[in-house]
Image 1: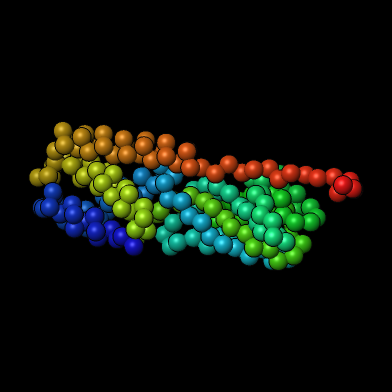
Image 2: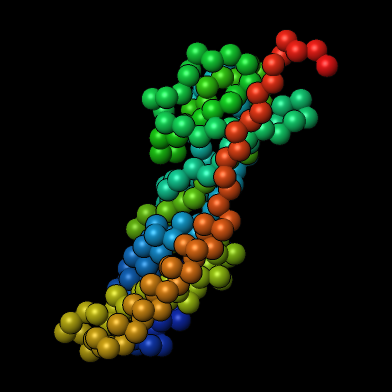
Length: 206
């Protein structure tokens, strides 16, 4: 896992007179803004749906919250099926049979029916809180420079400090915004679309 301190150590060379706590705060704000706007922090977790239980708390890393649910797939009798995403108010909690729809409210997920224990896989995007201290290596390595630019933009915009540099700050802002825009485009390409399950006439004999 990458830590906020990794960015702090790197940035201290460029703003040596800046207090470490100030640099760390700028890094945390940059991390939060980047992942909040880019939806680049994808997370997938297995979950066991228990018979008769329709409400579940999703397992997420510390100091994060769910930005958006991407998909829920279930495996039942050897078949994998994608559940339909809907609003909580539209979820039919009196449905019978295997799960077909889900809704979410923060880190809580609701399904319409669970007639027997069923394994499922939940995919969502995360946004860190301002207290974030660690980021998975895979995404930290990929977006290290963009987050670095975001932190330097914030630091060099501090009027009255000896590291104040508006021209430099504007350049870092440009790179930060470009990094977010590129990540948004990548996220849209990779975003999974929930496929509606096929409905068959059970009374039809082949």
